Length: 303
Image (tube, rainbow, N blue to C red; front, side):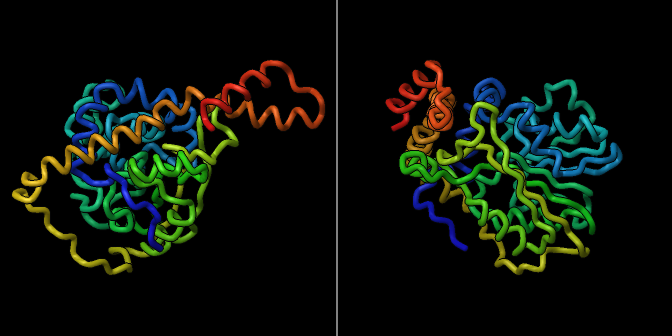
């Protein structure tokens, strides 16, 4: 099932690594308050079924460790491994007191440096959007889980409003819910479930998509690697990467510009909720002036 995104300037490891070299400095203060709150994190981790402190858990694409901080509320830090490709993000994670004891590893989500059948739980939050080959990354999730283990993938959802859809497709991978389910089932997971999440100010308004919009889970029932046979991952040439510096820089600039749209989305999305409330309350004649004003502001800002 092919995705319908022609640009995705930062859906590549080189651009993503450069992007996070800067964003890592402010990630917990800029992204989390509007798009990935502690309430959202705790809600998204419920389907992961972190039911015992002795579970072994890998948090793939864990970045600054924000999701890992939610995991260690239920699981012993010494049983948790955090992996990310960005050394800048990982330096932030290492500085967090509540992550002391967590094993922190630099690595690739599509080529995990872990043995097969190693973990009880696989968690990945806010990472799939940067994977050039999401199906390969989900097959790796299947491989490293023990039989009976559960994978929990938390990520963005694709918008339907035309401007938000264009910005999302220019920035990175925003999968549809059907794509998540398809990738999980193709990898061999069973009992695939999807739960919608979102910040409180954004409830019920999903036409603009979400940076964190769903929590997808699946169960591995048999030992070994994924039954889906993928071709070998192509090796990246360091010479080729260096020769494409200007191309990478241009993609980074354009992708960051598109991504900025989603960082400012909370400013007017609360007003968009006002539009929905206005339509709801007007049916019963109980609309107040606050809803009227917020709805009018949303009209000019979002449309």
